[in-house]
Image (cartoon, rainbow, N blue to C red; front, side, top):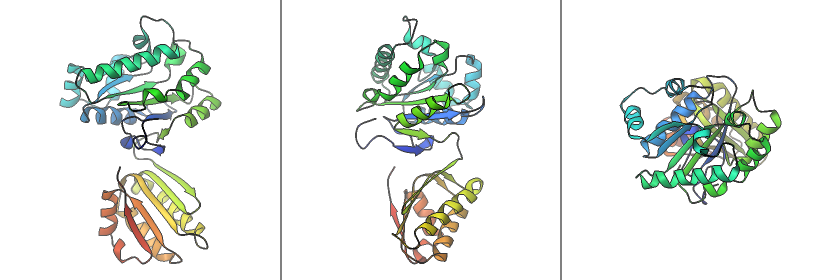
Length: 292
């Protein structure tokens, strides 16, 4: 995990990744997750970070470039100047033929330092974990690496996504790796993640027409659970897009359940949308703005 105050924790959309994050994501078909790696790469380029994509070994270079959804000036320039690189775990570990935790840690540290020396603000890598099979690596050794890699991120401008194909890794490995990473990514753009705990509804991702019913259901259940107990907190700090329809739905549901106060934690943009939808006229509702 990165230095205190800089690392993300929990389930978040890829857009909310910060420097120093070590993230887990899984996918279940060959086209899944391509928007995640594209968004991750583009964000790194905009932030003046160096980006290395370690794609699945069975994909050729042309296939990987096509998956970045990116013909354009920024990508072309980044590719030409070495800001965006396609590589492999074999190439990273060269001249060592096999995988060892120490060798991989050494090389990532070297590549982070190299990115800084080249004038970039940091390094971010997308690592498809099919390299484990390609290098015939021991899964237990890989899992140890994943759960003991904090030093790569602590106080360092290094960000990493580890992408696991759920068709290849068994469920026990996936569960362990999901828990070992400080933050977990939503599997694709446009998704909404819901967590319900006592007195709180936590939402992350995008609340729009595609996820509206899920959004309504989560808020309604949170209000139901809080009817005879503590005030309800609706945490929208992980929301990257709040549609007007969902904003109105939230206010409507709060109006229909006036039993107690509702506190909404949200970034400035969702807060602005809620106020324009009439949040200031809803009794028992308060908005607390939070930064990213």
